[in-house]
Image (cartoon, rainbow, N blue to C red; front, side):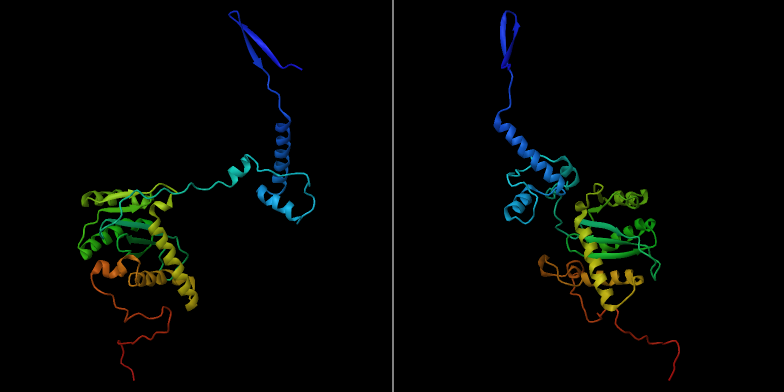
Length: 281
């Protein structure tokens, strides 16, 4: 057996040893092979589960002399079970006034509805959590309605809108809308594609509205064609219920008046229309 060889360079001999695997290395390799074999057989479960199965004796067919050490690396598991890296803490400034951050997102397309709307725009004021629900016939209506809402909000809240946060959808990048932002000095923040957490607050609002709307429709036994009517009602209610911030409703935070629930009825309840066009006994 060759233990080493040497090379002569400039009248000097350099010793080159040949490493040979020791018994421990060979044994460890055999154990890893056994772990890999049963890892593949058992649908890529963890070796901890296999060791627990062997210890409890809950199955037959596992080698009694195998220790099943953890596998150093399984390429298939790495590719198949990969997840998104943890989100970094938000570096954007926190909203300190009603006009600081306005987040916008779209819902839809919807199936055939009674009011013929196909989409809806959700506008969320970060500071107060005031939400606006605006149904749309098509995405091309986004720029017009968003501009109108921003002007109206600035007048009602006596503030100046500083930032508007949207995704990179084409409906938010029309020259008409971008020119309006530039004219008003509004910073347009656009999120990276597929990074929904960057506009997570309005995304969560969408989910909250949808869940509440589904609950109401199930309770009232209403068909899906009432979807936009229900969402509009939920948005109205959300603006008039307490939020965690400052123990105040979003409506009062912006309008500076306490909201009244005196006209609020159960959505879907029986109602009667008083016909004033004809006087009948």
